[in-house]
Length: 307
Image 1 (spheres, rainbow, N blue to C red):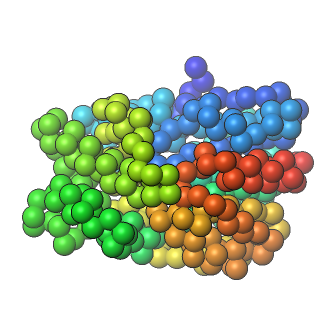
Image 2: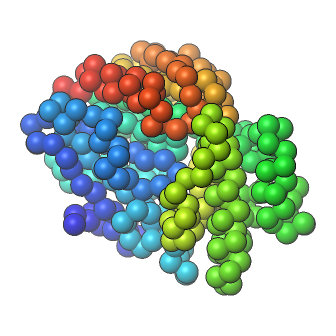
Image 3: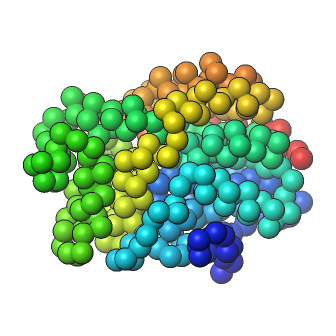
């Protein structure tokens, strides 16, 4: 099992699929905290791409794991994740690569490409978000207008004194409580809200991954860690930096019923990114929906990626 040592004592799990002479591609998973799995390979033709799967810091099979009781997430920042991706590229001897990112992975992909535009041949991003304070406020408060009862249950999962403040920060405190029952209840409540807004277009089906107590604690801790800090970036930093992506072909794919990340986010990004194309498809935030899957596959096949 390959691990890449990076800063702050972290070991990142990665794996590569396909032969070495194919077009290299890196997958940036969502969450933060979802981890990578072989399901991401369904987006690719392995006769075309060599696909690198990476578990970002503290999740998936990377170590230390965010579900560990005394975990310190202080070194888990967007800037450090970008440095980790570049460290992996250098380790693999890849000059330039395709970047695929979904949901949170689209935020990370943009941060990486704006920092290292000369290392990216093309990008395909779906369920696009940039993790601004405004977006976090929407997903934790504004979208309550669509699900008032479910949102009240989510809000009431934190102490009354915290209910009018930064909800991700309030949940993060609970998720790091010394009491394991408090941690687990907070993780369950957070993931129930994730199921609510993520499942809007598909009938509110529960995600089976949240049945795993280790996964849900890891996931909830990392999401709240990033959301309470708006991804450790300035407001609209990625949108303002989109001109750095000029010359990088980009395809943005977004569901018209995505209430987790509203379609104005990729719309504004496409206007600011020379050479990008926005495709609005039927469906919500889930990248496994049929039309989105088809469009992402087609975009990956047609990308330049010929470094």
